Image (cartoon, rainbow, N blue to C red; front, side):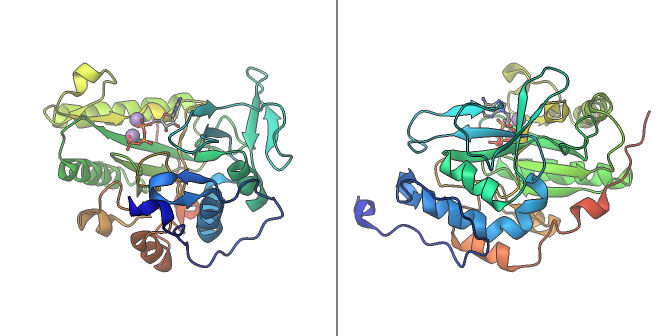
Length: 300
Ligand code: ATP
Ligand code: MN
Ligand code: MN
């Protein structure tokens, strides 16, 4: 109502600079929240020091919404004509398709200019396409599952990973769930990573079949949480840490500490430029050591 005249939400001091020019910087991508294209770029400038290591030199998939999140959306995995030259391409040796990646903040700015409202990543780098450097457990609750149960699921996964001596970190999805991420030393291939994740999801289901399912189907999910292990196949993607979401609220996928999960932070607790995000980003980076923590995936 009074929103139409409100000033765009300001993000705090941006730290990264770019030579990429935005056309229509004032176009509102999240009209209800008054987040403009420039506002999105300011968000990325602010998070860039933390985000960089998770998006640079990785195959990307893009969710574009050039007219804002109320307009048409496009999920794009491959290069198309007329993309900015800061958005780089490489041939996928298995199918000849052109994989997209960026090398620097100009690349991310070029994505914003291109109307990208969600950045999704493969769990590997462009230099090691066949060797994932992370495993993702994506917790997908059925409609009506209490958010507390989703947090407990994340904590259950953490406990099991701890038992296996596998490092683990957690982020909000910006939607309905959490993503528990296991950094890996790149060595195992996608097949091994996915098999591990599938076995892990099945073990959770076996331990608490009333709460968890390792089966994708909607029917199997009724009243339960799907432990989505399918993010771990070659070419599968997950929303990048710090990426905005094309959702109501202009939420972001935010890395957290486990203590913050225990304290009850919701999957949609953080949004572009909001108080919660600014506070989070002013605290120690909970994922700073991500790539130092990586272990080899044990076989068998
Ligand atoms: P939530 O917490 O609400 O589940 P999420 O990001 O985990 O948020 P999911 O639906 O569980 O959402 O995951 C969708 C995944 O599928 C994303 O990680 C994305 O990379 C991938 N994906 C594949 N195709 C598409 C598409 N057409 N549109 C959006 N995402 C897609
Ligand atoms: Mn999910
Ligand atoms: Mn999922």
